[in-house]
Length: 113
Length: 114
Image (tube, rainbow over all chains, first blue to last red; front, top):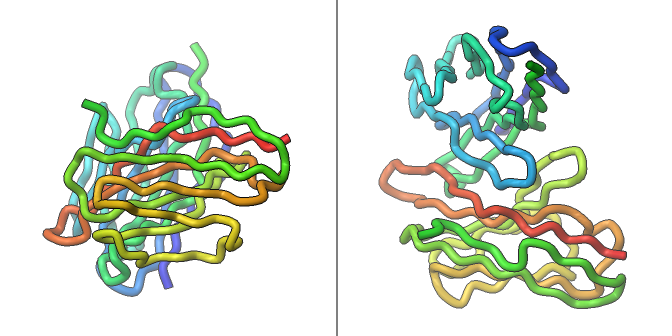
């Protein structure tokens, strides 16, 4: 079946630190992979996505590469800011089941000045 | 120009009451979803409608009933509310054809059952 395993939080970093949030997946087909971000009190926003192996998604300084060989889609940012404090969700989309999404459990990030 | 909107944003009610949450999308998507997010931020898919037809119906108490009057709307009605229904409910929408499968989320409805 399909599932997403995400690094547990919470994660606390100092401003300008390097961020990695690990995400691995299992899938029966060829899924698309996503990172969503949820700021306090808001809905989920798409941060980046990748639709096939070796694709790199990037946005706002965040990057993630679709690694089929390791079934991973780790989120990275070279220098975090206080405004990056949020909950980050890794997800996969399975076209064979009507684009049903499978979400990870979310990782809470707090960046301190 | 809000893409996915939900009303109300906050809903406080007593146990046993019946309530509805409304969702509308103006993105022209053919599929809409309801998710429940618990206090630990875990997201659970509840329902999915494609062109007004139910396509995903996860294990959810039958007190929850979705209704889709048209492709742009998916409402959630909850009967006999219980304490455990307290959560944030998110509506989302997407295409299910043409290769564009990103889901777009509404701002959420925080339901508190007293």
